[in-house]
Length: 466
Ligand SMILES: *Cc1c(COP(=O)(O)O)cnc(C)c1O
Image (tube, rainbow, N blue to C red; front, side, top):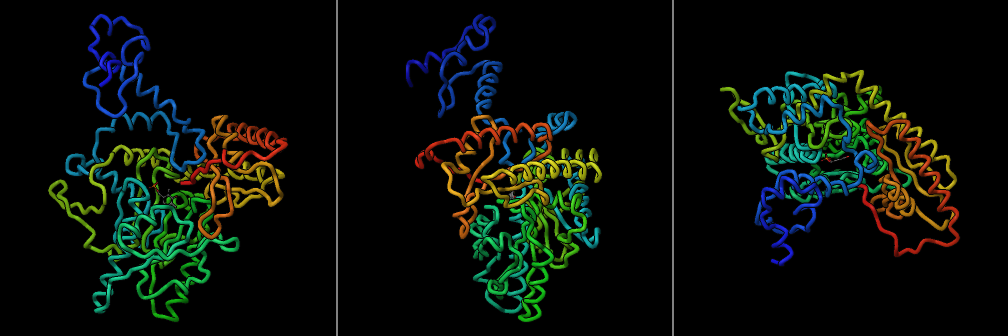
């Protein structure tokens, strides 16, 4: 331990703590150890200031146009959050009111997604879509195993079919649960999984197909109904009955309000389960997600654990144990506060901002749009093939200097030569702020267009989309 550090944590005397102004006393005026817990105490005021100040070095979350996760909630929500931060979602016996509200929330969501029989369905809250997707995938795997065992067949080599553009959680699912991932490539002609050549991937070991409602790279929807129709054809010719999990992390909380005519939910018979992130377009702070199954028969009983609840039985299925109860209360708050009309208004407002931004950006000479932001309010663009002294990474860097986080990244595998830049519009990016963002983009593009030589390659760095 260095002398300097010893001095830094030497016990301040009472007078010093009382009198020394903030930033002029020990703790703030000295450097603290970063990888070992300090030996001594400090005042709460000092510790608060240090933590607060270091967190200040993060980007401004509202200007983070890379994230899908909610960065704004109203004052009432802040109050509920502060009041309920101490509640553990898993203590269903001790916090029966929160447990009841959780149950109501997933049933409201099941209803929103047109579950055929509200009395015969099962769902749960999770820490986010990742856990929800894992549970949906696990149910598909168990169903397949049970069917295979009943037929006396091998359960050694399950596979799952997904777009190369899936979110990383699906790679994790396949890795952690020993399922072969069969990726359908993303190409210029097929930017999403749309059923094309699906028959080449399906076999007797296929546990299911993942359809993404709101691809993270572009915001585009995978056409669940077309994928289901293709699976109908496959079943007609091969007898294989393959079900769908819809990863609706973003879109499952947008489509019901803004694209009510789109058929993607339980109305499509092949859809076994649907998951979403309550903390994306569910409009709640991170971490809450939801997953719902079509009926109890398609969620194998072996995945369910029974805990006692008010003397009764409470079925649970989850990977996590302890997690915050406050996010579930916040979800309920949003459902009550906004209602269907409020959700429609909020999401449509974000889509309007997204399509305004995309039409302006798409009209700029160096760019062409990959998506418009009219599905979920997320869109991406790329550079035209014309040679220039700069690229999208340079633009991302220039915008970052002004506080805006607008990532540039390559498309997945087969299209990795295609670099795109993406904006995720969320509640809180007003038309007014969006017009300031557009001004910044225009100014930086003008700056870059006036460069007389290319920016050296080695200076570039890659940002990630997710
Ligand atoms: C964000 C996202 C996930 C992961 O969700 P978390 O809530 O962050 O765990 C999974 N799939 C898609 C399509 C996503 O957009």
